[in-house]
Length: 417
Image (cartoon, rainbow, N blue to C red; front, top):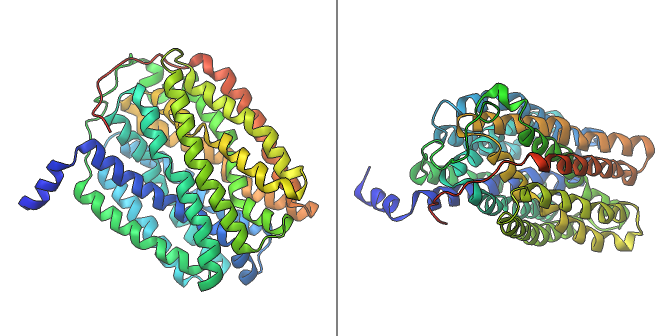
């Protein structure tokens, strides 16, 4: 390694440098994922696809994601995670780049499936790497910042899909998204660090926290996982269809619908994620169940607003969507931190892979397709989206019941960010 390269690595703290690069990759990941719903009416028009077929594209991504996740979780608990993260980022960036040459529905379907392979590596390893840099009490704060990439990336994806897709064709935004993904992956390969596994864990190690078999009888892990799965069913279905819903119901153009959803998502996502992380961090001082309880109230407050979005007058759709998304994003950092804190470092990658398998299998792998099928059958996308409200009720019940199993947190020094 050259002297100048080593000087750069020495100047930037390992925790901060790795966090920033992983945040950048997470941002590109979500931009890529949400270009499709932003450009969906344009793709649907070119390929003459039904609503159910468009929903099946998301199913293809997450089915592949689920099939690959168990293997990547096993690898992550036994081998260095940095090369695995690099592999995933490069693979999904190349698959995104290849979208520029897609000219039929089934090739796009295969492309989406390949992206799932890449995301199944990054999505599992990045939270586990960050958890090894920071102690349990700080992970909510760090993951709240890390998952800001969800609303910002989703907003940029919506707007790129709708705006660029309208003016330059729907393939253009996919092509442009691939280049920064490859560039940030290269920077991570140069400057990213692999922390010592479990360096900041202080909680008592027990069989249900530290063994793979124990995960299936760990109530803190299972309640957070299945509460998030029900929530993901709703969020995945809503995010895939809400621009199209506004296009049809509120009469907005494809460009304006994607712009409106993108603007609401970025404002609510940043505000809701930061407020939710802040509330949970303060509540943790007096109640170790705070991560679960903030997530519970987030979903409770979302329910009436969501009902008004889908079944209220068209003039209310945008204002109530603004309020609903703010409440929905309150749980982002707390619920992901609850999952990370519920297990020990020795099985953390496996636990995250099992969590991702469950939330996608029971959540958003099929919800866009189910919503599309209901829409095709009933001739009403409004009724299809109404199914997400049932999933939110289920999530509330699981999170409330699971809060009593929240593990105690113990103090530990942290590297700062």
